[in-house]
Image (cartoon, rainbow, N blue to C red; front, side, top):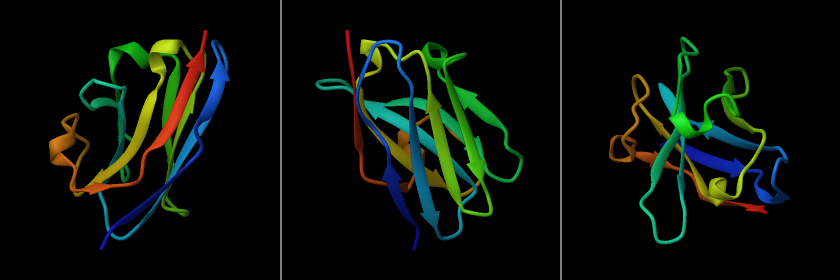
Length: 120
């Protein structure tokens, strides 16, 4: 059974940085971050294949967010910099067997969400 535990998040001002962490237990191939703003669908943010370190980002966060992993700790991180109000959302960690995907429906394992709020 795969379990994901998310930490990080909070309230920050525009331009600030935050780091999210997601600790995993169980056998997984890739992990991803998704976010869901109020009244909107859950959207892909970033993902990483654990064995290769291959990563993917949605266009709106490229150059500002960095996804990484520490395989020894079975933990994935999302370093978020230059945060904008439109980044405000509940952020979710997800995991799946195999390579990363951008569709949330392809991730069978989910951690709890963490709120990120960026004030203007």
